[in-house]
Length: 392
Image (cartoon, rainbow, N blue to C red; front, top):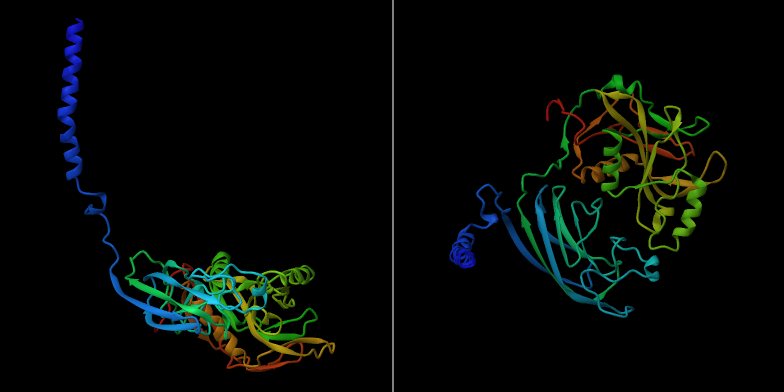
């Protein structure tokens, strides 16, 4: 019995040895998972370019025009040395320090000397960090610029070599190109009989004109503003003053300085948004207020807004105090809102509507004058319903 058991074990061992190579060969000959005929093909590379960025320039036009959904791969190497820095830095930039509080950088969330980029019109495009390596999906159509995150007039000794590869869209992108349409369902004169032409202060004095509408739910509205670089402004004035004092010791200026409460639909604004250069925020900033309408447009949430651009200070005609002075050409701010929000890939459609008896010239509640062509900007956010707009 023992001999039989021993022979059985030996035979089993020989069978394993004889069969093992067969299994290994089978595994070696099997195609790798990446060669599965059901796997999607890799994205096609459209082109590749290389650039040299010297430390005495901020922005460089790459000559590359991107389309929504295209994938961008950026790789950079090299060093810069600033005269007041203790060490060289690469494309990821220097660690921010106390001195950076007095610098105005193109992208304030990254270190001095970092490689940065932007897509679209320089006046409204938001800068973003590229660093030593970055992959991004372009949300919009626009020209690509790359730059060094440094103040104007700042110079670093050295250069970066930057390689940019652009790949075709993978077909999964859901970003929108804001389509310009001549009309939208529900946007008509009957709607504007329910929307006051102007907002007012607490005493009822008429102020800024209503110059834009947004169709979309609350989360989509907040997302489009934050994606476009707008900052939610504090509503509590006392808390904001304290926070502003504390923020003066932080890396950024306090962009969310409070804006006064104005009224529409018998209540103060639901949201305030601001867009400004750090440090300069006190004297100059793009800002707006939005109210949720007490009615809908084709069952969809409607946000009613008033946007102005602070350009300095002037005398408040109500109390002889000091107040912000707005740019009297309020259409420029309306257009600024359009350009920044449409650059996000989150706006599906955009149009302009001229109500009956349009608001074209008036004074604010503080006594400042403004003028407009009377048109109201209307933007429908992506995912807020199918359009049946005519004459596209």
